[in-house]
Image (cartoon, rainbow, N blue to C red; front, side, top):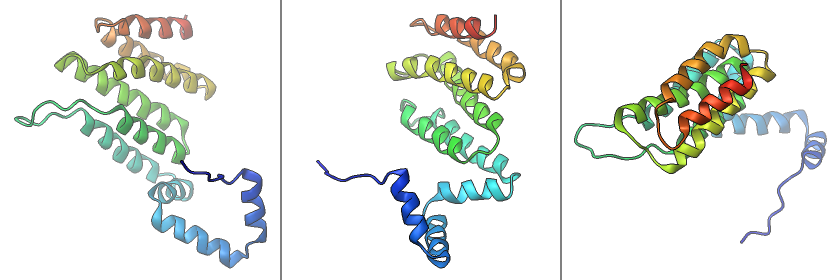
Length: 179
C-alpha cells in the first residue's frame, strides 16, 4: 500500500541535533497546538495537579461507551474507543497509579454493564481478562500491589458469575498474583 519508512529514534535524534533552538521551539509549539496528547503530556509534566482533571476527561470517554440512552436502541460499547482512551492517558500520565486506576475503571464499567444488560460481544470477553492481568502486572512493576489488591478482589468477585469463563479467568489471574 504505502512504501513509507517511519523515522527511527536515531534519525530523530540527528534531526534534533541539526535544528536550531528556535526551530525546535517552533516544532514543539506546533505539536502543542495540533496534538491534544502532547498538550496533555506537557500539562501533567509541568503542572502535575492537572493529571487528575485529564484522568476525569478520559474516564468520561470510557463511561460514555457504557451509557444506553432510553429509546436509542442498543449499541455495543467499542473496545477500540476504550483502548484508545486508556492508551492516550497512559502516554501522558506521570503517576502510574492513575494509569492503573483508569484501566481498572474501564474493567469495572464493562463488568457493571454486563451484569446489568447481559452479554456485550466476544471482543470484550477477550479484552477483559487480558486487560485485568495487564493492570495487575503494571501494579506489581510499580510496587502498587498492596494498594490495589482489594480492588482486584472486588473486580474478580463481580465477574464471578459472568459466562464464557470470564469469572474463571479473573479468578486465575487474581490467584496467580495474590496468593
